[in-house]
Length: 257
Image (cartoon, helix red, strand yellow):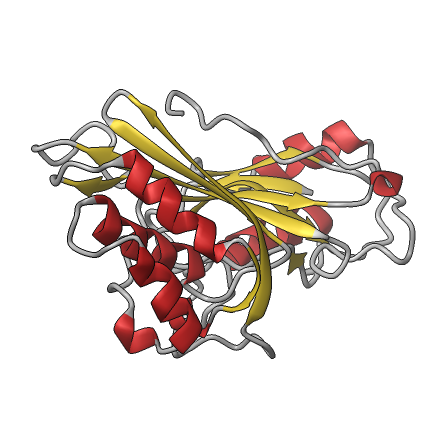
């Protein structure tokens, strides 16, 4: 299934003892639809308050339904801010929502304005300081490729290795909004928010362009900027080999960018 959700009122994707995870709500909806509770596996776990446009999950069930019935039926039991967007059945046995993805895409939407957001609060990050996009782009270049991203890794990260390959960072301005698009084979816990926070320190002139390469090389999380707010972060989704025939991640985010 392809899933979208607003993460504002959830404690992240992963199931929690108090039932506040998106996974908890999805599995409860599936239980009502199926009459039993399957265990779901997702393409990428998102943190509290982080949104998703193209989260992909898989689970096993003997129940046979039309794909449109899976979408409408499960959505009938989900909260209004979580929705199944598409469903596929009878995928190859080798498919795994997490392991089969060869890259993942995130987008961070930042409002750069003297006044904090109102209508789009909780949907965008915010900075009141002016930003130089040329400096942002120059600093981002040092992060491309395969690196040890320990400097941008949460102390709670459970990944086996901090070495990841960042394929692209694209930065664009749309009026008062600055949009960061990142693609990598995988991301560490808080990696995108830590990168964005450190890029902003360069973009607003607090740090030189060379600073990002230096902290990347030293691999010390304490040297990088604080983790930036979760509000503007969107998991666009994973990319899979064409053989699976799954929809690609979305490129637009509702009424925003």
